[in-house]
Length: 395
Ligand code: FEO
Image (cartoon, rainbow, N blue to C red; front, side, top):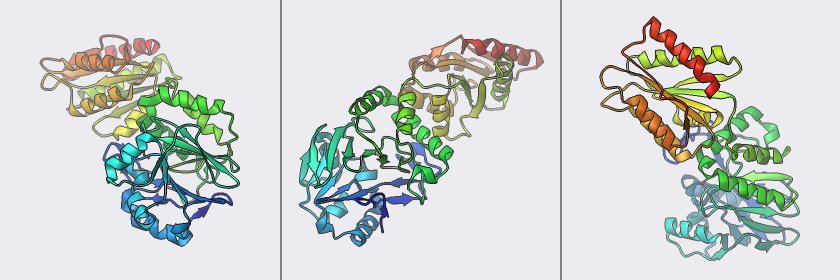
């Protein structure tokens, strides 16, 4: 059975306690997730979004326990990605002529995935759908998280159905933010933003400011993943405005890989020097071969600087560092600084190459980095501490 949100709105989604990766293996989801679908019953009935494909039959079966499917007048597809549209084929087999309201881009993505010519009704920002005592207003929200995404605002209940926007990969038996650990939810909301929405921050900020300027009364924000923002719903909007604006905290991430621990020793000595120079800064070390990549991206998102380390191998840097560099290039981080370091035996190009890649990724490289041969001895370790000490004020 569904879970009641208000007298007119019922949650009919799927809580996925098992999910540990998302987008294939791109994103870790250690706290599971949910695919939120909402049934809006007024004079007319609308279903907002469905669930991920593996749960399509379960979704339709449970929906039938909640409502005679023939009573659904409209399907709203806020976003075509399979985690929200995956149950559409199973649903539309039951109610084939029911109109599906979505953006023109969503028609493309849904047709491209399911190859069905359903009864699509294309909508734009400001278009409305009258349900009786309340009205749904559609707001295109491209890149939150695909070009096809839209939000749906329900008057009367004053609910913003924001799809991926303001969501979190967080499984919970209770639906609302005031019934779960707020620190866990904020951590997951930030991880979601950092890993999925950072590249689109400029558009996200513009869209959010546009919605705020509409002065819509908002009593709840119902995303398509995780909990519903019911207590002080605008808190997550405020967070998004901060996160979208070249976000950084007084933190430094040292991200390194190491073959025989020489580069690890360098990382620790540099961290010592930074701490000595600036006790207020939070410095964290991450071995990129041993740390979840999504967590590293979240830590870099929070940091004012990244210091990257790798030994030189085959005239380059290690594989795990290559992966992190590839990820951060796509993130288009703004207003962050960087440096590089590493141990080498023979040729020693890794430090220069990491610096070049960090520059290409938009980081401001503050110096030429620190490289040393073999394993740092006491003198080199002291120089590394001094390097960290002098680096701290530049970051
Ligand atoms: Fe939750 Fe972009 O899909």
